[in-house]
Image 1 (cartoon, rainbow, N blue to C red):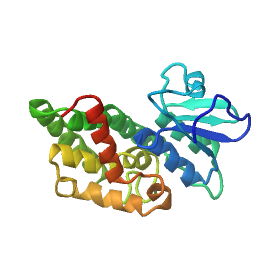
Image 2: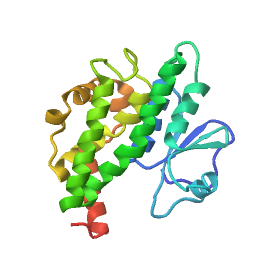
Image 3: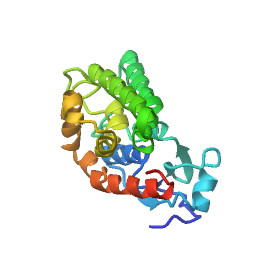
Image 4: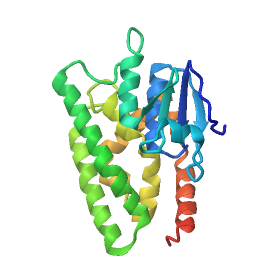
Length: 228
């Protein structure tokens, strides 16, 4: 559905772009909480007046509009969803212990600062630059795997904040593998087992695009920008 200028004063609207791992986070969070919402696909080459008005600072997706009020930046939106739709019958994304909450936020911040940038360099570059990105990617993912340890999820027994932050990237892993010649299963077996656990959840499986479509999308991007 094309985005329009107007958003309703009541209800929930998500301005998004289908391959965005940041938008995927929000979709997973809304699904986990059982929140009904209107999805509006954005054309990032021709951003809608609604997006520019609702996120005038960054002019980026995703934007969650709740009762006419916009919330921007994906990890902030996930936190907002957790606090807004709380209570009996709804899962809490963040643990009750302050230290455990701080740790979850630390690693989610690590994902935002490291994985997106490194992952993009895996398919945007070649040669020595790509090899450097590959080394950085392996190091970062090993740190994440160490943090996960033998736990089912990053927070322990329950799927939560950090899982949402990282699993949204999993549909891009095939693209990283293809362009940088990395075997995710061989390099990060515990993380890939965790991905499969997460993908067994309906909230995740229904929110993640087909990895082959992501690979195709990246191929189109590379041609468009003259990256061969």
